[in-house]
Each structure stands twice: as C-alpha cells, then as structure tokens.
Amino acid sequence: MHTITDRHHRARPDDLTRVGARRPVVDIPTHIITALAGLDDAYAAAVAMPHRGNVEHADRALAIARVCARRAAWWRVLARFTYRAGYHRLHGKAALLASDTERDRARFWRDTAADWRARADRTPTSDAAGGLSNWAELGVTA
Image (cartoon, rainbow, N blue to C red; front, side, top):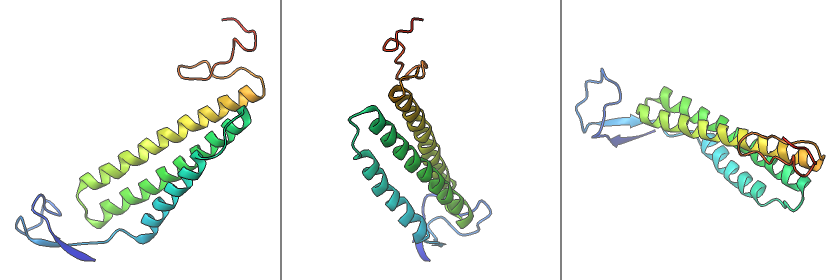
C-alpha cells in the first residue's frame, strides 16, 4: 500500500479529508497484473497461428476467442477489486468497459470460428451481416 495526493476527487462522499489530502491506495494485486500480461502474450501467439486453410482459420479464431473470454473474466476481477479497494468509480467503470469489449470480441471470434468450420465442412455458414456466407459456393440460391 502507498499513498498518493489526490486533488481530483475524494475517496468517498462522506470522506472528511480536504481536497489534496493524502489517502492510502491499495496496490493492484500482482496476480491480476500477471494474468492480464500473460493473456497479452497468449493473444499474440493466437494471432500468429497459421491460417492458410479453412480449418486453420477456424482453429485460430477459436484460440483468439478463448483468450478474449479469459481477458474479459480478468478485467471483471480487476473491476471488482477497484470497487472494493476504494478506487474512484471511474476506474471500475473503465475495467468493466474493457471486460465488455473483450466479451464482445470473444463472441465475434467464436462466430467466426463456427463460420470457418462450416466452410471447411462444406455446410452453409451464417448469412447474418458480417458472416462468411458461402451459400453461392454450395450452389444454394436465396
């Protein structure tokens, strides 16, 4: 734990300290920082996976989706910590936004993996906007 001079907000609305007073700040636990840093490395490794064919594209997309889902979970752990440790609400909201973003990315990559897998299996893929619709390749007309 260390202290900082915080001239922008008070730790709590009922805090009787004056603006500019020093307040204790709990350090972010190392296991959270380590986990997020490790997931940055895992993401880089997943993105670097070969993706020449449909199956490789599907495997790569699924690996990226898994990393994004794990990132989302760790950002939520960080958000929970910031709220409980007395950090300003803005920090918690930023961590929740990061978690929601990673959750959305995980969903995108899972859907992409399913489309590539369907393409590899020569079955119709998603025809939703942004899907890898291969209906024409299969000779299917709308």
